[in-house]
Length: 162
Image 1 (cartoon, rainbow, N blue to C red):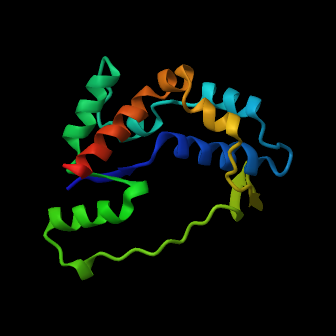
Image 2 (tube, rainbow, N blue to C red):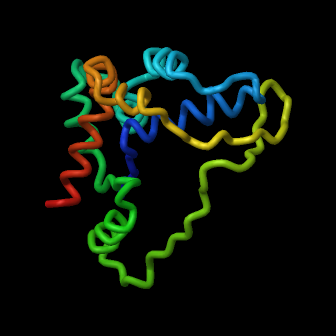
């Protein structure tokens, strides 16, 4: 049985930006619209799709999407975790009491990181998006660059409704 999960691409990217680019800078960077857009342009817009790929012989994003959807027995949606776990429970024929999860992650706080053999605690900057950052998610540039992850998320999200 092969299963995984996906996250809404804007939420996934925003978390990566605030954690990897802002928080891990040890307070040397503040979030700006300019750095947000620059980081998005340099970020792999098919990060989740590429991570789930079991093969590298796809010629198009659509082929990769079909391959991933065909290779996995189950893919859940982070934003619909309760529904995803119920669906997984039904697929596996488990009792309701066999599924338990506890939310342990909250945005903001501190994290232990190691960079270049330099272990330390860093402040996790809360994920606070400006209106311009949110508008960027609606842009043609965003839609084009993050096409792979957007298609994957939409397909998996729709499968929960089926």
